[in-house]
Length: 135
Length: 223
Image (cartoon, rainbow over all chains, first blue to last red; front, top):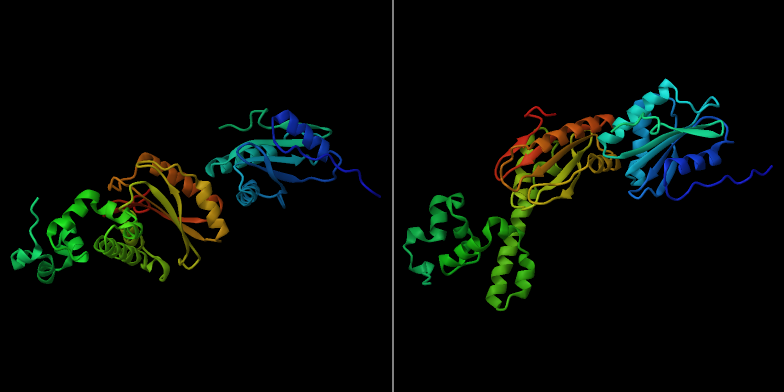
């Protein structure tokens, strides 16, 4: 059985709406849960899209792994996204905690934290739009 | 300007004799230079120092100068200075830095001061250590302006990860010669200390190098 080719991500992250829709289009039919880090350069071009392995762990360790990936990719802006385990992309308290920890970690290392996007049920939630990422 | 030949000076005023009697460390910069270049008059050494200062002497490209010298003598003089500046650099560098494990700030700061005190711009570097406190690598990461360097914790720590370092020592010079930490130095050190903790890297110290002194931000309590 051959699977249809998934829509690819844009080369540049223009705004929350467009990247959110692109992520939904690409991943809505994928099974399971996963968390990725999207490494961007200063003009928000996508340098790398990597899975953060074992993301269900202490938020601190997830943030550390994401940052290590960013080091390797030579990125300066990070965007994190994950597929909701339940169909709804509404953020859980754990998601909010993880966002805060990543926000703090990236700030300490002088990275810009673009957003944390949750995808599920054919739509997405941007935690920046929800006000969970503060300077 | 009349320049008195050294041979006409009283014996106890000639640089070489003064060195023999009082030791090299009691000679002025101009006297040391005049010995190195084999000056016939003290003014030759004095003008060199007066024109450039000690820092200028170290930062001039004497190798290029000796290539461009118009006469054989001027080329020879430039070559002598080039050789002695290079030699002092190597002495400064051939420190315990790269052999023995590092245990105290003093032993690492002294050779760094020798190398960094003459720079006219701020430079920030980092020494990456392994689990046995031995140097894996030393890197200069930023060169700033006279009094500022824009630095990012990210760049310091990414090399630590690349080199698999267990701990790091950061240093930078103050071209003013005064090693007293600025408020930016302190806030940056706090940020770096927290950031390295996140990555399980131990920030051992941040040394600020002045003209002849240094400040350890660990001893001073910031870390």
